[in-house]
Length: 222
Image 1 (tube, rainbow, N blue to C red):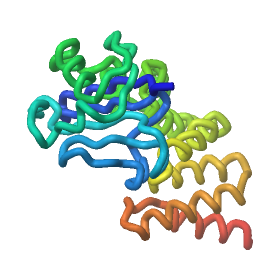
Image 2 (image 1 turned 30 degrees about the vertical axis):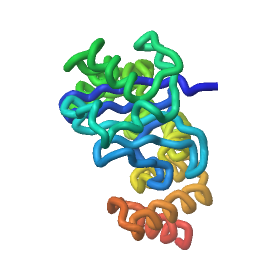
Image 3 (image 1 turned 45 degrees about the vertical axis):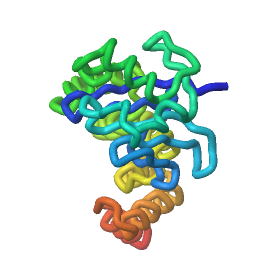
């Protein structure tokens, strides 16, 4: 069965992210990506798995007829409900997005941009709308927002899910560890913090995981 792609158009970055519904490019393992050019990459479900979509940067500037991008026309095929297209290549998806959306962002981006400027319940409402609009990256923000509101069990669910679809993000694991710790799952929290530290040591973003793990150890020893 061909993947049904969710279209995430971000004109302010000039990005097009077209991935199977429920997935995110954020924190996707590098070995899951297959470069077509410096600007376009196909994403697989695992290093040797099926193709689940693609990402294009400098999207509006791409010359889709250039020899460098020939593979966007001959590669894997997808269904794209937003465009009313089925069994189409990445190149056909990009042409369709340009024609339909132009320089308009997809709906999820309106909610995303509004949410990053809010806190508390206002942010929660916007992140929920972003998620409902199809943007799975909102699971992460929804998780830490619920955590800040003291709704730890709900935060735990969203953050646990995000570690599954964004396994290479250090902050993903750090926040998941915080939610685990908040609901008393200390062994799970330890595993999450240790994973965040491993990702940091491999060149990922620095997080609070080392300090949080030390504090948890001190509390258990007291």
